[in-house]
Length: 238
Image (cartoon, rainbow, N blue to C red):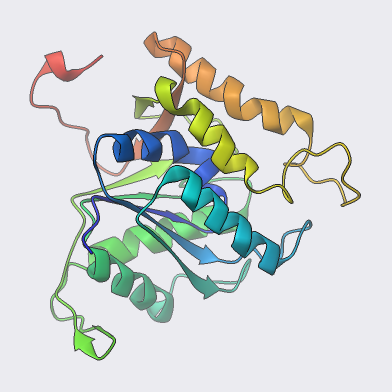
């Protein structure tokens, strides 16, 4: 299966929190989108890896993605080396995405910055034909995504471009709240975390609303780029 977009996150819920509106929008436009989680989030304070696995499946169903995979890297301890790069390269070559969305280049959680660089490096290396990989015993062809975009996470990083997701904000919120073990629940007996309070839950909407305000729409999601953004015409800008 060939994908138009592959969204990669260090943890299940990274993608939903950061770019689910963009994903839902492109799926509504007929694009094929997949999600790749690098870890199971097993070091998370709340819930269990098994609960997180089911929540990730529920979120994928809400978004309507074509596929979701998890590489099972060690939460908190994966590194940017040949082994981890090759595992991501196999997925990139398997699905041949035109666009890869990945973690913020710098963030509060150490896995986000690590995941960002690891994914970016793997996207480049995936285009080198002398790097040989196999999947299910079959040799893979080299493939390099046309674009790698980094979504914004905990830190309020200045975006290089923003996407109007006004018509898909409800879907984004539903996909995030599929991770019921992780986010605000006043009846929960689990320990409190920086993302389990009401302010964080509310921030999902008000941060998107603020980006939307700046470009004159209701809600938007922001991304940073590794090279200049190019358009065919200045009239393509909203």
